[in-house]
Image (cartoon, rainbow, N blue to C red; front, side):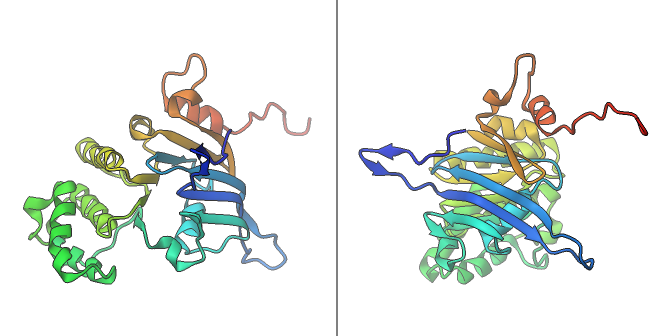
Length: 266
């Protein structure tokens, strides 16, 4: 796995996201029990303009890594950088957008009212707000529903207004946690199209997902975690071994538990 920084015209290109030797531990709630290790020695880089899939079974450490990047959880050891800046510095997170797995919005607001609220939080000048709101709502396909209350939206529409919220500050990096979880095929296709549009616009997308078909269709590279460790990093097609026809088959092989061939008492 090559995670070195590329060089163009004699100058280093700083990765948009870097994890080096990242370790995350959670203290045990039980007396004298060892801390739980969520991530152990994770090295990862994501370059500008990539759509990057972050995969692993439940409990593999994906959410812990995302929380470190967002400043929600401190790293026990190692470093995490965004745009070359340590994530512990607030400036590192000024140019990211985030969509959590579970979105909770004031459903008595309309989509445009919600986005106006977030635009003010980000300090977007009054003269630019409405233009930006109109653009992101059009991008996610909610222009015609902008004045409807969010409580009347389907789950797919609520996910898309979540994407609009994540995009309101025109971020260079978008971090998505399970963006297609629980969506029907049409809604998943719409989210996939949005991600492809973002790539065409030069944005970097870093997302975790269990929808491996979606990951395979949109990602330039994927990382696979197992029990807090990186077990694979490459383009989706390159992870498949002879005879495997999908990323799902490769994922199941990479994350499988070793077979227990022994017998009790043997």
